[in-house]
Image 1 (cartoon, chains in turn cyan, purple):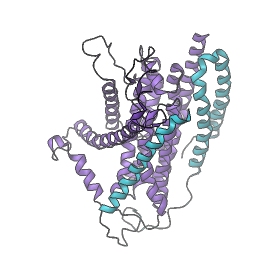
Image 2 (cartoon, rainbow over the protein chains, first blue to last red):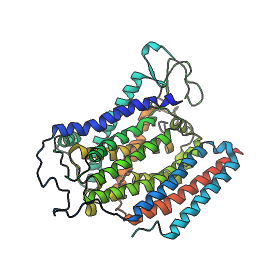
Image 3 (cartoon, each protein chain N blue to C red):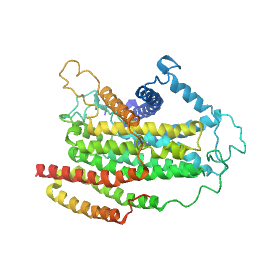
Image 4 (spheres, chains in turn green, orange):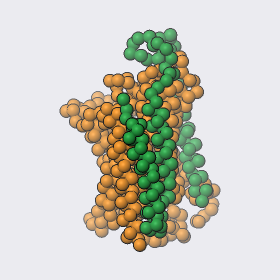
Length: 118
Length: 360
């Protein structure tokens, strides 16, 4: 039932109050003495060059895409796992085919070198 | 339902019961965080033949309090080129998501107030008020926890990106890539016990372990889960985001005072959550490890067993941290994708085949 989730909403309220309230309280309590040096990002003591918002390694994008593929797979696995007893051999064979297809995908990206970091 | 004069119901629970439970869990987790930092320092000290903090209060027990007060009264320094909104959202999200995940974890079995518990597992309570020891007893409890803990990744990445610092950005990128990679390993490892229990409701998962913990039926899944969970919580030997020799402090380099404290808190509360999930799915949750007919074991409350198991797991996590050296980043990623992921899939297929064949 959807109403089972209602207590989570209350808890969400408590958590947000806590998560946002604590940093807010500390910014009220702490001193405030801004200076030009404090305004700079930390770069081991030297004056930073260029903005930090620049291009980064493509491997991170690839990892994110692979994550989407396998995360969606895990969403199919959870409901299957709860009723595999009722589905019996049929369920296992079907999920076996599904996993095999994804496993082939994993082998392919592995061979292509998408999992290799330099 | 007994006595509607107790007040309104929020979903299946009395409104004040929900509020009390919510406040209690938030308070207990915040305290647990404070004392975990002390425990970590004490454990690390003992492993390195030191004493650790022992000046503030007896055995240094007031140290977390002193640290907390210090953090509250520190100045909030922030770099000028930051993204103002996201810079503030990230720490708040880290703390919120960490606590929120705990809503579906049953700390003890159902108590039936004003009526007998029905069924072998004592889960239904038709004539009385069922006191559940979690906030929401939803039937997709495990999925809920995995979903909420995933939200924590946003705080790492937003915190790293918004600060406009190179160390922060690199730390944020590394940790988000690491956490999402190991999230699959976590999910796949947890499917083994779910197949055996036939349910995602964590109360059911625990009660089906009355005779044998899933640790003994799913040893491979437990090991996979524990390793993946260490990486998921950015713990050593997988604490690459905070590899201080190369990245200063990682994604929270540019945070100070309690804003930094929220990231710190998120990490330690995630440790507790991870240990609680392992306890629930593999170590029999609140169930006593000894027969209840022995000695006084029938009188020990389930919540105590639960806490004890969680504490043991937390100790092991600290022990690992101060024993093993850090992995290199490329090795970390290959471990996740090339070892844990295929092994997890293998475990699922073997478990599923055995369960299906035995049912047929």
